[in-house]
Length: 88
Image (cartoon, rainbow, N blue to C red):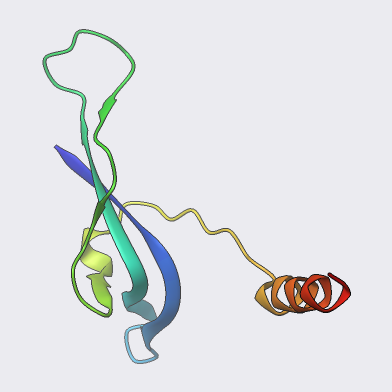
């Protein structure tokens, strides 16, 4: 089975000598297993997300097939929340 990793990207390591990403560093990392075998269906069987214990999770790029990134404007979200709390 394949595995999907998700989490908050807090850092990455880039090798200028090799001109490639070496790994990704995730916070609040989770994993899901995907099993396409034996079902005969085109819809993959995806397990529920499981938390990966630890403070950070380092994912080597040798294990990465593709990446989906969603950018969050955290500063705006925090400011909006604080403003709503002040206004009540």
